[in-house]
Image (cartoon, rainbow, N blue to C red):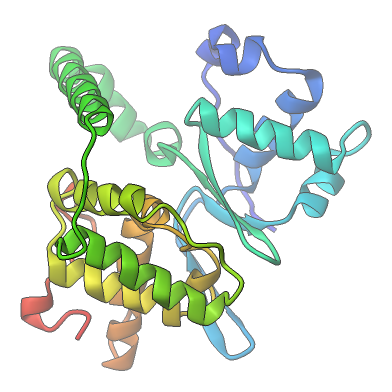
Length: 266
C-alpha cells in the first residue's frame, strides 16, 4: 500500500475535466492520483522483474470499481478513463489481464516544492516554452493532415511491417492494421522524437520479447507513448546483468537516449 500524500491545486475546480465530470468520475480522478507510484517501483512475478515509473501503476477495471466504491461500475470506469485520456490527464494501455495507467505530467504536479518554486518564478521562460510547445503541436497536427504515401521500400513502412509481423508471433489473430498510418507514426518517431533507426529496431524487438510489454505495445503509437518507460527498464536490466545497482537517470526526458554505440541495449 502506498503511503504519504498527494498534491491537488485548487485550480482543478475551474477545469472542464472537473466541472463537467459526474460525481463518480471525480471520485475516480482522485482515486487514480492516490494510486500513482511516487517513486520507481519494481516487483517480481513468475520469475520476471517488472518496473513502474513515478505516476504509473498497473490495475484492472474490477479493482478500480472496488476502490471507488458504491455507485461505480465497469462501464462507468471505462467511460471515465476514455474521458480523462481525451483531456490528456492520463494514458491508458489495456492488456488481456490488466491496465497500465500513466498520469501525464506527474512530476510537474507531484514533484518537490523546489521544482514548483522554480516553475513559478520562471514565468516568462515558462510562457515562451508553452508557446513553443503549442507551435510544435500545431506543426505536428498540420504534418499529420498532409497525406503521406509510403512505398514498401520506405524505412518507415519496413518498420511498420516488421512490428506487425513481430506482434503476430504473440497475437496470431491480430487483424492487419493500416500500415500506411503505422508508417506515418514511425516517421513521427524519427522526425519529431529524434529516435535513430537502431534505437527503434532495438526497442521494438525488445518490447515483443518482454513478458509484460508485448501485451502493451500493439502499435507504433504505443511505442511512442511508452518509449521513455521502456528505455529506462532496458537500462535497468543491463545494469542488473552487469551487477550494477539500477537507478533512474536524473536527465530530462527529452535528453534521455538509448546510446547503442556505447553498448547500451546490445
